[in-house]
Image (cartoon, rainbow, N blue to C red; front, side, top):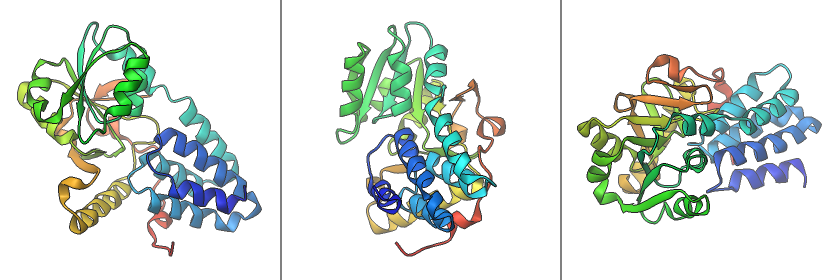
Length: 270
């Protein structure tokens, strides 16, 4: 496949696991060594097409600011491939614990699959958790589908609430819609809320600003509650689980994993 066609394919992809999307994008960008001048434009188009996928911003920012971008892109793909966040989550979960999830979290799913003693209360909104519970079933993880309307009761009995980050800085996390409900309910009951943030989710403030602005624009075009993502204040989060383990929510846990690349925020014709 021609590099440009490959990038168009990646740009149009939706509903793909962020780590898989980063790997596919890395392969497409790596093929652009035949047209290095188009690298930054390609990166800009990718993040415009996938504005809420933090790892793509991380990949494109690191590539755009690297002195050796075509070497960096393969190293970054390898970092995503070797992400230890799921393993760290599996190790940190309490023995025989009960956890609450929402939707179809990929990294959380991998972490839960490593444990055979955890019960999962899987909250569902518009059948968003269907593939997630099937994955739990395949891995013999004890689970119970729970209607999102029972979020209060579920978070009250749980040991931990797990929310997967699409992106974050020290003040905000970009998360799947419905996450603020379980985070607020957990806070009311004193249940810990862990933000699971794999490689590439910790971004400079300006990138999270761009995501928040994009979400606000979508909310102006449609009903606010129909937007797939929301902005969660990090004050509702107790801890962050990442590739280096679990640590309390705070600036060190949200240290950006890439430099700010202003060129990614310039608008281009699609």
